[in-house]
Image (tube, rainbow over all chains, first blue to last red; front, top):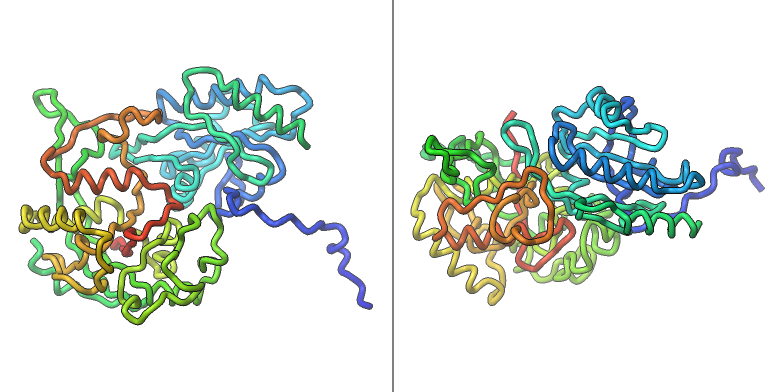
Length: 182
Length: 251
């Protein structure tokens, strides 16, 4: 009998990725700190996510604010189990430096949040998977549809809130339920 | 402007013949963004500039798609992930690599999702054409505009009633492109870019900066149908009348 490699013992085989997981997308993203990252690196946590662009004056700051309301409404015990993620659709301007400035301006807690920059192909692929409509205008701004998504620990969208006119209580309740079901 | 287009014929490495579509302008059915005229009214007739690009002369066929599947097994219907294609993906194929009869070989491949179409084009070193590129190629510098619209409407009325024609059938337009009207509906890279138009009003979606602009030509029902169809799609959808062709931007 041959000895198994030491690393085989310590590395559990990951469960297969569900077919509806966003983490099946192959696109690469870069964090606000400049680290190249595959989407699948988010696996294991609940993820609250949205697509925004940081030069947006009206709805995008509201999206961030609504996500922060969810963050504040969660119990302390959820810390480290829910990740807040902003994917920028502005592949030209939202480079990591700019994302860090945006995070600071909006008092984003980088312990719990990640901001991602992707190239045009990555943005198109993710928007297609989320069902987000968007269009880049000649001045570099975007028109886009709005939603906050909740992904389960495997990256499957389990809830979506397109209405940002009121606090996202339904999403918060859903996260609490999922946190209970470990 | 289009007189030199036939000189631009080229055969790509993949074997699919492309046509060089020269730069020019066209007026999209829905304005891309809000622009005011000197009198302060919405300018719905502002032309959009399109740079020259290479476009497949005809839609991608079942045989060409089969070659792609031989090299990319993750896109075969038994393997494809449901996030990338719905359950109807390649529904007309008998099995993973069997598209059916000989006559099907040269017909446009349909029942393919946006993700699948884009993966195919990327494997050829191309991309799906943008909606502007596709519409500009169809507009054909306004050549025979009324006859073209009538032909499209007739096809819309009949489509689905007959077997699909071979991809290479039909007359080439002034750019040398075939089958933009009368074969299948086609995916575009930014099919999900429509931000205005009546079908999105009251859809319950909220938009960031979303203008709701009118049509440049309210009598152009053929274009209205096409833009509405695109707006109704999700990237994983597949239907029996929706195919695609690929494009390449010039450096």
